[in-house]
Amino acid sequence: KQEVTQIPAALSVPEGENLVLNCSFTDSAIYNLQWFRQDPGKGLTSLLLIQSSQREQTSGRLNASLDKSSGRSTLYIAASQPGDSATYLCAVSQRNTGNQFYFGTGTSLTVIP
Amino acid sequence: DTEVTQTPKHLVMGMTNKKSLKCEQHMGHRAMYWYKQKAKKPPELMFVYSYEKLSINESVPSRFSPECPNSSLLNLHLHALQPEDSALYLCASSQGTGLQPQHFGDGTRLSIL
Image 1 (spheres, rainbow over the protein chains, first blue to last red):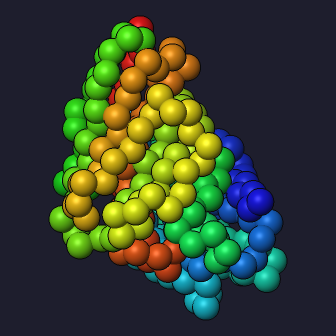
Image 2 (cartoon, rainbow over the protein chains, first blue to last red; image 1 turned 180 degrees about the vertical axis):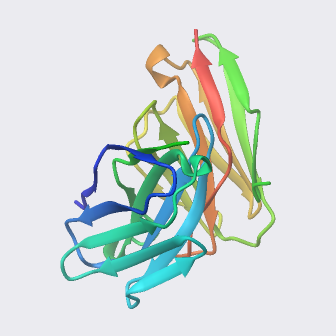
């Protein structure tokens, strides 16, 4: 069964700092990998989707990379802002299970003004 | 505003009550999902509907009964729930296969007395 792990579990940085969140998965037979943010008590907001054939995707201050062979993805956040404070989750879509998405354990980010 | 709408936002019910959670999307997506999320944990998949047919049931207790009346609507019928079923219930949709991103609603916060 696919296992998705995110490190660190929690991260606290001063405003303006660049930061990297990590996601690792055990089975490289994936369709895609999706990064989400979740504010407390809210649903998930999709940030970026990387197809298995792609290496990276960018949206504004966010850049996500994918190394499928090593089972790793990173989410790079440039010039962090207090509004970036949230929990960040990665999820992989598994090839041999169709519509099933496996979520990582999440990283709780706090950006200090 | 989210493109996946869930109602109600909050629900408090006793263990003998029967209630339903509703989810609606008008993006033409053909796959819809129910997830359960406990505090500080990632979402756990419960059910997947693909083209209005139940395709995945993650061994969920029968006190949870999903229903997909049409391609835009997804219901979760609740009966005789236990206190440990208190959680955030999230609905998501995607275009149809694991290749496309998932879009989430804001969830229903369920409390069982």
